[in-house]
Image (tube, rainbow, N blue to C red; front, side, top):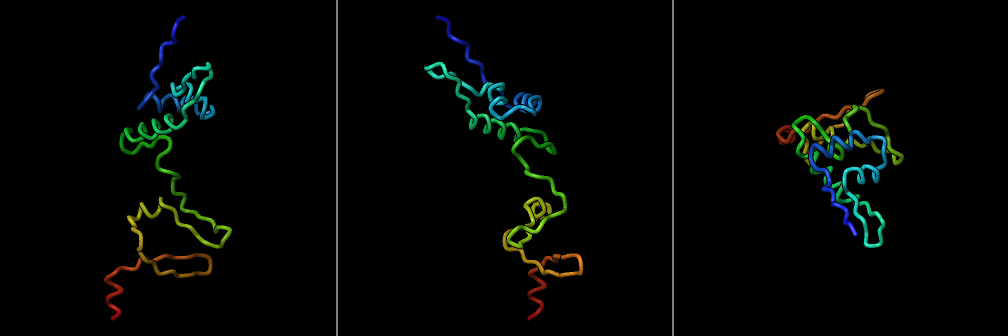
Length: 130
Protein backbone atom coordinates (compact mmCIF):
# COMPACT_ATOMS: atom_id res chain seq x y z
CA UNK A 1 0.00 0.00 0.00
CA UNK A 2 1.62 3.25 -1.10
CA UNK A 3 0.94 6.51 0.64
CA UNK A 4 0.51 9.66 -1.38
CA UNK A 5 3.21 12.20 -0.78
CA UNK A 6 1.66 15.25 0.85
CA UNK A 7 2.09 18.36 -1.29
CA UNK A 8 2.75 21.56 0.63
CA UNK A 9 0.22 24.30 -0.16
CA UNK A 10 1.51 27.31 -2.05
CA UNK A 11 2.11 30.52 -0.12
CA UNK A 12 3.32 34.05 -0.75
CA UNK A 13 4.22 35.15 -4.25
CA UNK A 14 3.87 31.60 -5.66
CA UNK A 15 0.26 31.46 -4.42
CA UNK A 16 -0.62 34.85 -5.90
CA UNK A 17 0.94 33.92 -9.25
CA UNK A 18 -0.96 30.61 -9.43
CA UNK A 19 -4.27 32.30 -8.55
CA UNK A 20 -3.63 34.88 -11.26
CA UNK A 21 -3.02 32.07 -13.80
CA UNK A 22 -6.33 30.47 -12.77
CA UNK A 23 -8.37 33.68 -12.81
CA UNK A 24 -11.25 32.05 -14.75
CA UNK A 25 -11.48 29.06 -12.42
CA UNK A 26 -13.81 28.63 -9.46
CA UNK A 27 -12.61 29.30 -5.93
CA UNK A 28 -12.61 25.54 -5.19
CA UNK A 29 -10.55 24.76 -8.31
CA UNK A 30 -8.03 27.45 -7.35
CA UNK A 31 -7.77 26.10 -3.81
CA UNK A 32 -7.21 22.54 -5.10
CA UNK A 33 -4.58 23.63 -7.63
CA UNK A 34 -2.73 25.54 -4.93
CA UNK A 35 -2.61 22.55 -2.58
CA UNK A 36 -5.43 23.45 -0.21
CA UNK A 37 -7.23 20.12 -0.31
CA UNK A 38 -6.89 16.86 1.59
CA UNK A 39 -8.27 13.35 1.31
CA UNK A 40 -10.51 12.06 4.07
CA UNK A 41 -10.20 8.54 5.47
CA UNK A 42 -13.09 7.58 3.19
CA UNK A 43 -11.11 8.70 0.14
CA UNK A 44 -13.16 11.85 -0.47
CA UNK A 45 -11.43 15.08 -1.39
CA UNK A 46 -12.01 17.97 1.00
CA UNK A 47 -11.15 21.51 -0.12
CA UNK A 48 -10.10 23.84 2.68
CA UNK A 49 -11.40 27.19 1.43
CA UNK A 50 -10.79 28.96 4.74
CA UNK A 51 -7.06 28.11 4.82
CA UNK A 52 -6.81 29.07 1.14
CA UNK A 53 -8.42 32.47 1.72
CA UNK A 54 -6.28 33.13 4.79
CA UNK A 55 -3.17 32.27 2.78
CA UNK A 56 -4.29 34.74 0.09
CA UNK A 57 -4.71 37.47 2.69
CA UNK A 58 -1.28 36.74 4.15
CA UNK A 59 0.27 36.68 0.67
CA UNK A 60 -1.30 40.04 -0.19
CA UNK A 61 0.32 41.58 2.90
CA UNK A 62 3.81 40.70 1.65
CA UNK A 63 3.43 42.41 -1.72
CA UNK A 64 5.65 45.42 -2.39
CA UNK A 65 4.12 48.81 -1.65
CA UNK A 66 1.68 50.02 -4.29
CA UNK A 67 0.60 46.54 -5.39
CA UNK A 68 -2.55 44.93 -4.06
CA UNK A 69 -3.43 41.28 -4.10
CA UNK A 70 -6.72 39.45 -3.91
CA UNK A 71 -8.90 40.27 -0.94
CA UNK A 72 -7.24 43.55 -0.08
CA UNK A 73 -8.08 47.17 -0.70
CA UNK A 74 -11.64 46.88 -1.86
CA UNK A 75 -12.80 48.87 -4.86
CA UNK A 76 -10.94 51.73 -6.45
CA UNK A 77 -12.48 55.15 -6.00
CA UNK A 78 -14.56 56.00 -9.07
CA UNK A 79 -15.58 59.45 -7.80
CA UNK A 80 -19.21 58.56 -8.54
CA UNK A 81 -21.86 57.36 -6.14
CA UNK A 82 -25.52 56.43 -6.51
CA UNK A 83 -28.48 57.20 -4.31
CA UNK A 84 -29.39 54.06 -2.36
CA UNK A 85 -32.91 52.62 -2.29
CA UNK A 86 -33.49 54.24 1.12
CA UNK A 87 -32.60 57.70 -0.28
CA UNK A 88 -29.17 57.89 1.36
CA UNK A 89 -25.85 58.75 -0.23
CA UNK A 90 -22.99 56.64 1.04
CA UNK A 91 -19.44 57.93 0.73
CA UNK A 92 -17.15 54.91 0.80
CA UNK A 93 -14.04 54.19 2.80
CA UNK A 94 -11.79 54.81 -0.23
CA UNK A 95 -12.67 58.50 -0.08
CA UNK A 96 -12.50 58.86 3.69
CA UNK A 97 -9.09 57.17 3.78
CA UNK A 98 -7.80 59.35 0.95
CA UNK A 99 -8.89 62.47 2.86
CA UNK A 100 -7.61 61.05 6.18
CA UNK A 101 -11.02 61.53 7.79
CA UNK A 102 -11.85 60.13 11.20
CA UNK A 103 -15.11 59.02 12.78
CA UNK A 104 -17.03 62.07 13.95
CA UNK A 105 -15.60 64.56 11.42
CA UNK A 106 -18.30 67.05 10.46
CA UNK A 107 -19.23 68.68 7.16
CA UNK A 108 -21.39 71.53 5.93
CA UNK A 109 -23.65 70.49 3.06
CA UNK A 110 -24.25 72.98 0.26
CA UNK A 111 -26.91 72.07 -2.29
CA UNK A 112 -26.60 73.39 -5.84
CA UNK A 113 -28.89 72.93 -8.79
CA UNK A 114 -27.12 69.75 -9.93
CA UNK A 115 -24.52 69.16 -7.25
CA UNK A 116 -23.89 68.63 -3.56
CA UNK A 117 -20.76 70.08 -1.95
CA UNK A 118 -19.32 68.95 1.34
CA UNK A 119 -17.06 71.31 3.26
CA UNK A 120 -15.25 69.94 6.28
CA UNK A 121 -15.96 71.88 9.47
CA UNK A 122 -12.79 72.73 11.38
CA UNK A 123 -13.00 72.65 15.14
CA UNK A 124 -11.28 76.06 15.27
CA UNK A 125 -13.95 77.60 12.96
CA UNK A 126 -16.70 76.30 15.26
CA UNK A 127 -15.06 77.96 18.25
CA UNK A 128 -14.92 81.35 16.44
CA UNK A 129 -18.73 81.65 16.44
CA UNK A 130 -18.87 82.23 20.20
